[in-house]
Length: 573
Image (cartoon, rainbow, N blue to C red):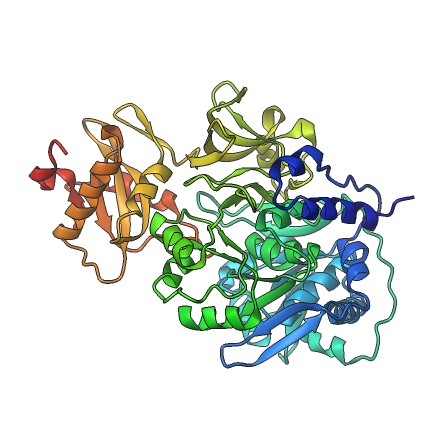
């Protein structure tokens, strides 16, 4: 009988064999339909790791210190920690908050908790005490793991008594009243334990970033994330032996997909460079020294990288990826000019793995997120009729195709989970367009798209034009109430270095937008300043919309706001 490992490996190897043949990959790929007992850490990772001295994890610090761990090292370390957790009282089904930085104990903990069937709740170290307390409660945590210097947050959250009834406190390093997880590595070997997780058992609890509402608590199973990320590996274009770097903070789904599952599915090495202040030259030097072959970074990092001298800094890079907000053409052009590589985009959610992507070896359509990844049943659905459409609609997953890479639901919120899967589709809440080549372009969130002068306006389209101007580092467009047009597009702009927030800059940006947008899309108002963001770095347009509503309820216009009517020379342009 074929084992779960063999089934999983066959699917992985098929994608590797067709890494640059998208059509063949889509035509022939089948998800490994794993039922019954399955545990990714023991059925996949341990099998490829035992006796494997190839590098699995490489962590470099800003001061030059570094640590390297082989696959066999990670299997052994996680065995010891798994046995230690069991001895401390953590078992199958127990939710554990993991609030660590990019340090070996993060990967140890992920693997160890997985091995014993605990439910992992990755948590960012950027959380304040109140948010931490809420997450402990909502996740029903039976344990929390953090660095010793973060233990104080629990005091602030709980008052004088940091103890939470029924919650085990684990620290990396010594902290009063906490058990030190490093003690697990002092033992010579790990006692045996029995792993009996089923494919449908919960594995991960992820809090969404909450751009428009209170963060949802997404539950993934032993299959939906570990198996679903086969598609993510394909999108990134990873191969065995690769050295992969993603600039991402632990605690969010992006970190797990790019810094845990996808690389180790491919049997690649995860490379991490920890720094306190971003230095493009230092990062490029470390990437070159380490021989990084695949690299993923958010737009903010890409924009800072091109300020450095990229010439001669390609090193061993083969694949470069962007994630999050759209990249402006200047960044893409500069990377192509100096490295001969095209930054590829993709689309995914905490609720899923990566769904859409520009894949290796395929022509990249400018502005497009790419095409549905192998095995991902992406469809566009008309938000009004609920019927599939070929051109523009809400990006959904067809539930009749049993998408493996989809969450089990929202913990504690069955109504919202049912709403997200109504009508036979999982609804992403994102509007997209598809062209004749099948390429999908993001239009905007269903709750971000608005009407101006009775025309439908996509903030994403306007923001894409805004960031083409050299003065614009970041931008967000929201509707501003208007007595004549009901609403007009207003841009909130973060300026690039060297630009002043004055009339000349406002005029230059508005003029640029007039040249690149249809009349109904024109930016009519503009304001400079920082953008409100979630702790994961996503723009909270909902706050900007609320601000515009408050402004409309008052008198006059806010100080520092520029309007197209301030510039008579724009008339007729």
